[in-house]
Structures are given as structure tokens and as C-alpha cells.
Length: 255
Image (cartoon, rainbow, N blue to C red; front, side, top):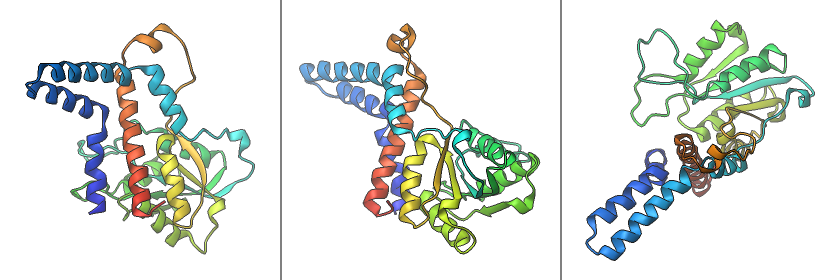
């Protein structure tokens, strides 16, 4: 039940859904005074959520900061790569399709090639409500091998459906082989806050290595301050998903 609710209720908190519901309510209601107020609220909400400067400030505050390679002082035994980068339902099925989170794979490969991690653990099965049999960990592992990582240096965990299950399964597999502090946890910067808390709660407090940043350095150009941006709405969509996920995990006792 938790898995189903966590995958569905979060959609109601997306800015575009909220704005649409306000507009819809304004269209259905007969009271003209309330109707105008609802329309005004919806317009102001659209202006707010489409503002790049505001969205960037919010995203920057939420994302866990990047770790410069110069600050990595030793080689870690494992880099734990959390899935969520591959695209599904794209054909033909004879290749791996990577979405906007491609830096998860790119930076994991870079860490491996530079010697900062000795092995890669790819964690993640199917996060879909309806399991169609695809296992993202298997796909990303095959992609890493095509990129030159030997199969012996890749460990696959492909049964977990969410971050909590990944943390539990990673601990089960790696306990006795290495220590949590000798593992880098690799995921998107926006997802790292929940991931760190979840892994710590599960008893495997790995070291954060954020990738796939959406925020950028603060700028004050005209277009950033005043021109509505689709990207800003997408950032808020990510933020609403992650903050709802964090709250849901807290209520479930996962963090």
C-alpha cells in the first residue's frame, strides 16, 4: 500500500496540477467574486512557479552540494549507483536509453576510471506500479561494461523498488565485505537528501557524491528574473516529488 500511495499521491502536489485544479474550480463555481479570486490565484501561482530565479533558489537550497574530485582523499571500495536514469517503454529493446539523469552514469564511470572507487554496485529493480519485467540495474550494468568497466567490478542489486528497499538490500549484500564509510552513494543531487537519510536509517551511512544538478549559479539577468520558463516548472515538479517523498518516508519510519 505504501508503494502505491508514494507513487500516486505525489502527483497531486505538482505545481501544474495544483494550478489546473484552481482554474477548474474557478470555472465550475458560480460565485463571480470567488471565481475571479481563484483565477487571480492561479495566474499568480503560474507566475511564481515559472520564475527561474525563484525555482533555482529553491532547488539550490534542497540539492546536496557537489564534491570536487580534489576533496576525495582516498579510494573507496564501492560506488553505490542508485537507478533512476534509464528510460523505459522506448524501443527497440536492443539498447539502453538514458534520460536527463545521465550524469549518474557518467560521473560513476569517471570515479571508477580515476581510481576513486574500486567497484560499482548498481542498485534498483523496477519502480513501476505495474512491473513489466525490466530491471534497470541490469541495463545500467550492461552499459557500464560497454564503457569499459569489467564485469567482475560490477555488483548488481535488481530486486528493490524504491530507495528504502535499495538501502536494505545494499546493506544485506555489502555487510561483511566493506564498511558504510568506505562506500560512495551516487545519485541525483535532488534525490540525495532523501537517499542519505534512508541509507543512514537502514544502517548503511555511505558518503554522498551528488550528480545530475538542476540548479545553477545565482544570476540576475533579465530573462532569469522576469521571463517565464518551462524549466522552472519542471524544477518545482522535482522538488514537490522529493519533498513529498521525504515526508512519506519519515511517516513510514524509513528515515
